[in-house]
Image 1 (spheres, rainbow, N blue to C red):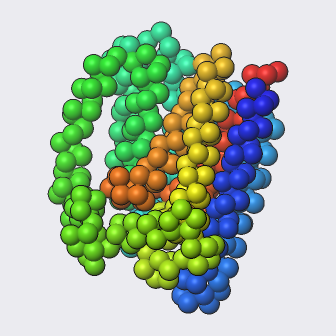
Image 2 (image 1 turned 120 degrees about the horizontal axis):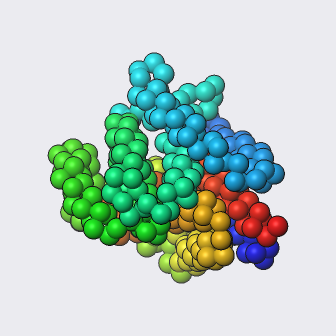
Amino acid sequence: MKDIRISIAVIVTILISMGIIMIYSSSGIYALRELGDSSYFLNRHLIFLLIGLVFTIALMSVDYRDLRYWAKPLLMAAFIMLVLVLIPGIGKASFGARRWFKIGMFSFQPSEFAKLAILIYMADFLSRRQQRISSFWFGFLPPMMITGLMCVLIVKQPDLGSSVLIAIIVMAMLFVAGSRLSHLIALILMALPALYILVFRVPYRLRRILAFLDPWQDPQGIGFQLSQSQIALGSGGLFGVGLGKSVQKLFYLPAAHTDFILSIVGEELGLLGTSAIVLLFVAFIWQGARIVKLINEPFGYFLSLGIITMLGLQAVVNIGVSIGALPTKGLPLPFISYGGSALVFNMMAVALLLNISRIQDL
């Protein structure tokens, strides 16, 4: 599997490199005007990249199977942080959300840690309960209760997108592990009323749905972000207007360097640039799936499956939101969007994937 590891490392390196370029391009003018330093976001991103590299090297140097002993402590740490971040004075509030810890000049988002923690826990749980996965009481209910509690805490921040992502990943892992389809369908049906209340009874989420259905009905109001994103993608054409020459990043498109960075890629590098990113993610998922297929150790199998599902879904959702195919979710594009915690933990997830492949070759 050495060739697969090399290809994944190359793909992720290219994506990170494109992210560095596009973060500076999309945020430079905004940072200069608002913060007096055009490289403010770039410098912070590079620091988090360095932190991610340190953790990546550390994870690559150990045996991933040792994480089984840390599965429960890591999960407990995630729950403690998700509770603490909701407490005023401990968690940092921004734009009505309380999702971060402020550590010096940097912010840390515990939900990103929680994603990786529950992947490790679920991989350990499924590897231990392989013969009882089809049981409702012993194979299905325990992970669903843990996942449900984690999702509730994340929704309280509020962050519905991340909680739905975690739920989908866990259900995908359970399905592959052999959980009964009837259990999963029953759970989805039971969750629909709660999703209805969380989406249609919360004004700002309802506005997002209305904007998704027809952003051009109110392009200066609820549909502003999506309409500006589509303008950016459309104005790029086949080859783009040129690197650094985006108009939409000039205070038209909100979150240009985070959730909607792909729209700036489309404007500056055109259809060719966006297609290259999509193809890189397709190649990453394909190569990751090859690793999953070749793993014969249960814990490594389920962990690699969860990692590929997590990163693949985040990419699909972000791309879908940017082009208007999905409602706005607030999930960054892996390895490309600005976002310290997401970058660090996504790099750690890739390191675990490569570690699993390396150990299997020994």
